[in-house]
Image (cartoon, rainbow, N blue to C red; front, side, top):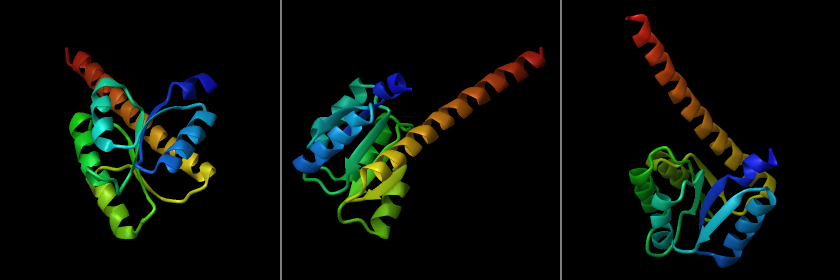
Length: 148
């Protein structure tokens, strides 16, 4: 299981250096492979080049905010799980993030255990969605063969 988690690539985008380092350490200690950026504009090209398993982004950042980042990531990869976080969290922001395509919304500060639990839930949901799509395609192929 540790090998599987070690391959989990998480793109972390947060303009607060101290918090970004906390996230990086927490993810590494959990056996994941974080790639961190303080600037969403610099991070975005990596979504095209690297097969990330999840994007973790702050809401309020200079240059490009988290909502804009969600839209940009969705244009590149509509299936990539995204978890939004904010120190200024409120229900309206959380609802807006989910409407834009975030899979979850965390309010800072949070406990490491809760953070990792919620990330794993988002990763598991994305994996199950992919498996359902694969099984549906396989079932369609079997039905096509039955009609022959």
